[in-house]
Image 1 (cartoon, rainbow, N blue to C red):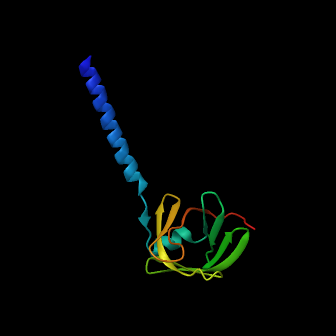
Image 2: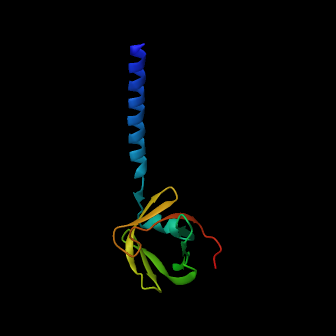
Length: 127
């Protein structure tokens, strides 16, 4: 009976360790996009926050529509040296890295979107 108990405890400890390792690896599965990947993934799409408080629509012609707090502002986007560069009416301009994991997007490095996280999806009709 003691052998069975010890074996069960060992199995639980090993399973817990494997589970913790898997969760830690899954936590940072983001990868940095290069110039071509940024263009192909962002163009014609939108990025929204999880609760849909804001949305940024990246038009195929390089224009940008930003919907936030009931207001629409516009600007331009382009890709340069592995970074997404933004220029919008709010003077929120600059360049930064784009990282992706599935449909989750993060902006890292420098730039106006630093620390911004969102969901990449097809553009939705917005007002």
